[in-house]
Length: 533
Image (tube, rainbow, N blue to C red; front, side, top):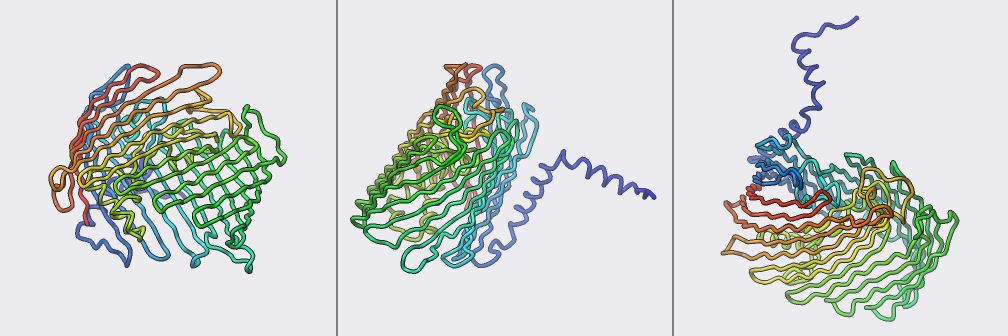
């Protein structure tokens, strides 16, 4: 027999039915209450745990808030961004997690008010001492939907040009060594990653197993590697198995040379875009690790594989006040790897860690804290983004090159990066494209540069000038000359307002040319951020 609902119960039922319409607002309110209630609450929950609530607000007054070439609209956006971060550093646990619900209110209603949920979790757990580890990653953010858009890569205002993405990764591994007598050691890991996106994109899942059997350290040694990688998406999949053997020569402690030979099979596409043979095929390569001085390091590797030749190069050199780095990679990738390891990103920690006073700090956690304080005091972000990742369900071949130089001084920091990126869907997984940039071009070439100057003004304030210039070009059989370029100039003055509050005001100028025409945007940006401990 049906139960008659009271008036209160009916209202509750209607509230539950309509919860989807205000879920973002509910999360925002809950997070805000947590942040505000933490003002008088203890922030150290236990030894080595640290919880930091924050609250930031931002105002952006733009004359082209939708970054449109044909119908620009001016608007003012107010953001309220409560956030909470959790950090734990101990012998067994290294965890850094942050969550921020970002509420956007458009005064002139160019877009509807909305909440964007952003979180970033990075953790490592040592289950068995010096042997078994579990690494976890979780990232949720809004990304530029297309590399041919004009939206700045650090902007989340033009809702019509954004894509919500969530990426998860878990990697259990025997990172320590399982010793097999005095002959060899065994190590292995298994990684599972999944990314989900809105719009026309679905999900991509990748599973990778790697294992290595390596001889005891000697002037001449050997190593055997096995790997298996499978990638599944709504529009294609790949399966790749590989086994290789290496001969290693170490003439001294600063140099290591290796040559390898093996077999590989899979259904990746070859250089002509045709499916490669399903049987095992030859693969071979060589590697170099050279550290001639403590200030210089060079790592190089090249592999001839059935679908293409892959390679990697990483070279760094540091001096007292300057650091140089050069990287080059050519390998298969997918959307999850693009988001976990963004393309065209300069990590200022890479160069700062090689300069004084940071290079002499032996504790990596303490060194990271000092570098973070250094950047915050100058109004800088750790990561400088130059290129948007390509959001696609397909696996594709990517060639990346980047040169960076950083100079630090008593009051100033100068950083310059030049990057080049080429993505080719003709070498990768099968399947059809759908709703991504590979619909427009089978080969996408991106290049540009990023320059940052930070100067301390007075004892506490800082002035930051940043300029980013990028260009994306597409090539296909039916369409040629597809291109877009973007130049973004930011000038920001940051200053502390209180012991735990910082404010900033800045100008942004964007000049871009996209498929639909020229895009110009000028904006005034003001922020206020409070940290509650």
